[in-house]
Length: 178
Image (cartoon, rainbow, N blue to C red; front, side):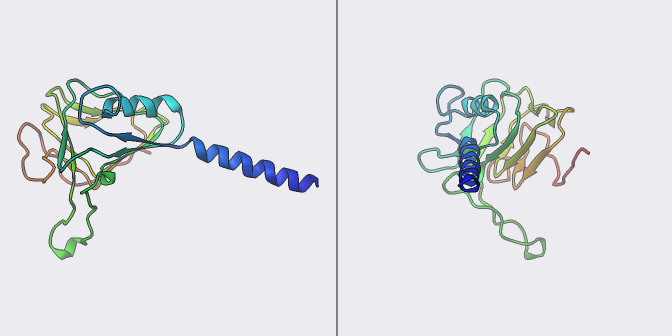
């Protein structure tokens, strides 16, 4: 009887731990308040568990989110996944197949004071399927970042990958801090 009770307790603990991971959804393009990108970042930072920020913006895209000021720093284990927005699709072509077929449907267009992806030293942040544009004079990662992954995103261009006005484009590449 005791082993069965122990197994049941382990199952309950595992289910409870998994239930705390959250998907928090951006449902509008306004700067702050319920359903905004700013509010979802604050909610993810506050709960202390791995989170995914997803997108379900209504209407035909692409959609532009234009924060009036710098967004909150990113904390914890967090994925901001633009490919969750209806109409978005990840790239399926290999480099030798002639270009990208990715479709991005969400753009974060800057307020002109720079876009800094700052994380705390224990954070593990992935940004996927997003266009970051309009950030003058710079787009950059904070020095304290220990793990920041940009995947399948356009940096320094609009959502269609063509207009780099108001931004310094960053060539494709990757970097990782030890």
